Length: 210
Image (cartoon, rainbow, N blue to C red; front, side, top):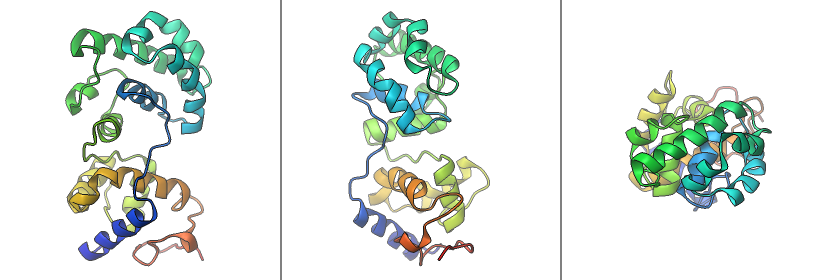
């Protein structure tokens, strides 16, 4: 996609949704981190249903550790892979207390060193909690990067690197949310809603629906 087209691509997404928000519920950086860890291979709706009661009981690392792994499991048992995720939430809470003064670090390497936290999760947390210009490439963004031609790549890291390179700086903070929401509700995997797409004329996808 040409530079001018990319500029226009983001301008239209910004115009439609100037202040995009993630769909996970959270009250502070710690609960955001926990929610994103729990969201792997799960829906935001399902995660929010579980974390509502969980965060009322434990919204700090200390409270989460005091709750204990078994009780965390009880709160998140409706979420896929809940046993491993509960263990990770308990362990990362301990590490935050022991190594980071109970604070979520705004540091990619430090976040990725936490149990259950990979590059994508760290990018999400840094972007939402700290306003860092990061782009977390999930299945939606990977699809959009390749389908539209804005940032083609064979791996999520390739797409991320390309997006960071071509996205105009003034749009970097919100690019992550615009692309995810666009992929979730418009540029869907099986039935893209091309007639409702504000960037359809810029998109390079050959299988556009009518």
